[in-house]
Image (tube, rainbow, N blue to C red):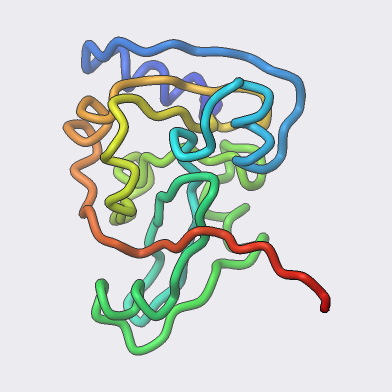
Length: 162
C-alpha cells in the first residue's frame, strides 16, 4: 500500500477529520507552505536522525532547522547525525524520498516534535509524496502519534557573504 493511502486509512480508522490537498510538485517544506498558502510555522517537516540507539523522527516547522546540540541533550545522545538518503529510502520505501509523513508510529520509530509546532491549532504535512498534503488539528495528531514535545529546533537565519 502506498504511504499516502496507508496514512489516510489510518486517519479514517481513527475517526480523524482532515483535509487532503494535491498541489504542484514541491520538494521542501518551505515550498509546500508557499503552494498551500500557509505560514511556514504551520507546515511540519519530517527529519530522520540517527543517534546512539537507532533512528529518530524529528518534526519541526518549515521555517526551522534541527538544533543538534538541543537534540542531543533532549534525547540523551552522545552523537546524532542526519540519516542519509539511502537510509531514508530503506526506512520509508512506500514514500517518495523526503516526503514521509510525521507518523513514526507507523514505522516503529519514536517521534520528537519541536514544541513550537504545538502553538498552532492546525498543522499540514507531506502525505508520502511531493504533491499530497494532509491538514489536520494538532491535538488529533498528538493523540494518534504520542510524540515527545521538546525544544529541538531553531529558526533559519539568513547568511550573508559579507
